[in-house]
Image 1: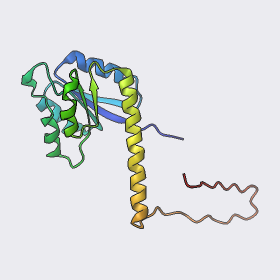
Image 2: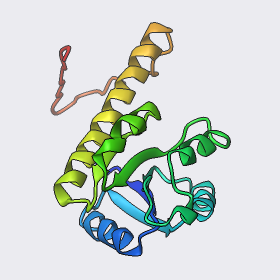
Image 3: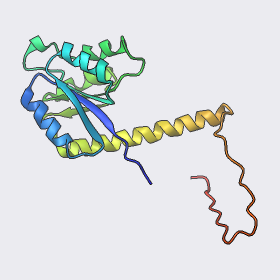
Image 4: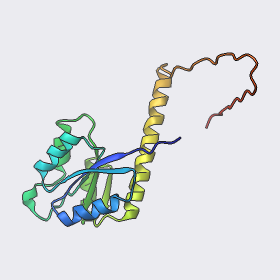
Length: 169
């Protein structure tokens, strides 16, 4: 049975209506779990430190400059974490995308966030997890650290023996 990978998230945006719209669209995705939201840099930082989400939806061009929201928020996270949450930029300006790429953000979504944007995001998250798992398995094999495989036990008078072989995929 496959288990559904869950991604917890926090929204940091100085526009309450925008937070609500993003949260509403994300609510239809069982993979995404809302934790909290903040309207400024300091409250957002506290939430991320407290909850340690998988994802942070971050506005980098706030309506109110007093909120202090910007890409510098990402630098601050590196002060506390060696591995930061995946940062998803949500903003109305596509011109800021190049600068965001310089900060190695996971994705860049134009507001208002649409359902198809989150479909793509969830698929990208799943692909990223699969690729990371594959890299870990390959590095373990290269280093000689392989998973322990139990030897099969001999069963006397078996009714049916079913052997499934997997080739190299």
